[in-house]
Image 1: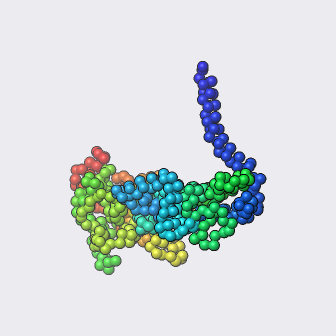
Image 2: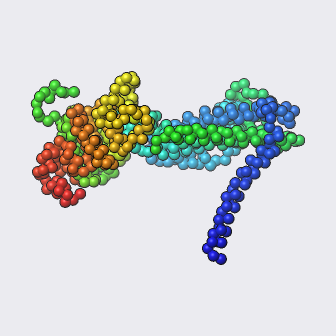
Image 3: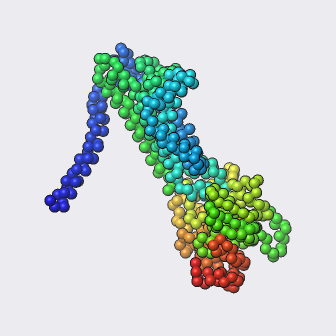
Length: 281
Length: 262
């Protein structure tokens, strides 16, 4: 066999591999769209479920997921970004900071159900928050922290070292340099990390299972101490826990969850590219 | 500060006194027992081959080396008679009195105006008019005003290399420092920009005390009033530039100037 036929075979193989990667993603999204679209209607989105969730909409689950995502952001962003600033800008290379870094890497690898159990023990029971939006948000927040910290730290370190020296030479304190130069330059990267973390949190079931999620609660929460329904858990419930559930409700729920996550992703990309255009290096 | 004291006398007033400065990085000596007076309102140059300690000495004068770990320093640096390493010294305030320009021009993110007002803003100057005046004055002194006066609010990154370096000088001048340190400020510039920077330095010495690490001996000879020759961390010889460059006392200085090494 000559050189060229072999090359063609290799090329064809690579194309097939590339297609093989894309096919499952398209298939998943495609099936969910095809099967879920018939269920999708204005009333499906804005109505309460009734008749044991076999009829009506999924409004409380959408609201619940949005609230939990917001709560997660409130819990994870300040702590995560502050931690990243400390690690990237202040911490010297000591045994302690190395231990902290190791802990962060390992936290990122812990299965989400373990976070759920931790949240149950820590927030729901020990701190007495009960199964509530607060307890669920804190649990998701802790799960999200490692992602936020490590991506934010990386974004801070990517800002050229010399900016810090220049700021100091102009009479800036270390914090003034961070506040005025480093942090604004690192913002696109930090936003990316935050969104990635929040997306994961929005789609998680295990951490909210014991800490916030309600099986069937056709009302909206009155306070952060209330339980809520949430899309991932609702999807689990309608798929496996209720006999005789119409299929399009299952796929409709999945479609809403995917659309929510993808639209957040899009917003993040837009925000990031907006900031990146203003960057000077 | 003590202008009345100088009166009309011709004697040289030392602005900075370096007394017995030794410095090492992780046990590796960079400066050995350097004692030197830097005269006020003059250009003093530190010259010598690479690794001779010039830049280190420069960075000690505005305490920019404070954050470098694992270093040792002994000796005293007096600025206007005051020990700048004394415990009560507020380092950001010291750096406002002792400005620094680096080898590679690095404009901060933002516009030309943002760059000039960065230091004054951090120092607490807020009033719009005062800042605007500072922008004009600093850019004029750095010989950049005419080229940028119509585009103060465009990104500083769009300036040419030579303009960026003059912007960096203007940025330091906006703090009205007493001393200006320049570490090979023209190393990345073309001859025309170099000449512009040198001219502005010669004008600036009437107001400021200038210390420069020149990027070659010719430059040192062109702009220095006083000069000091360093070799491997040792201060070999110093004095008026006209004397050191024409009739050096130490044979090592002579060999370096005439290009026999380094």
